[in-house]
View 1 (cartoon, helix red, strand yellow):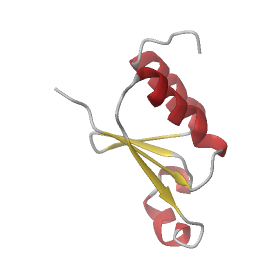
View 2 (cartoon, rainbow, N blue to C red):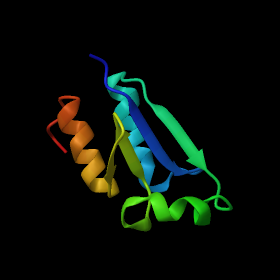
View 3 (cartoon, rainbow, N blue to C red):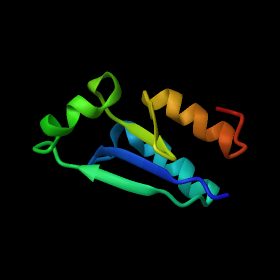
Length: 81
């Protein structure tokens, strides 16, 4: 069964870039949703802790960039993080 990943962050590198790199290195497909700063106030109320990045895994929301990085590294077999 294939897992659906959806990474939501602003249209810049910053805190989500390591997550994006982990997907690329692992060769795992994901949806890279980049939002503009103008759209953020409308979306903020639906984000956990009202912050980004958010990783949706089959609809379940995970937050905090370091926690997401650790989750992905373990999921993809990269336990050195």
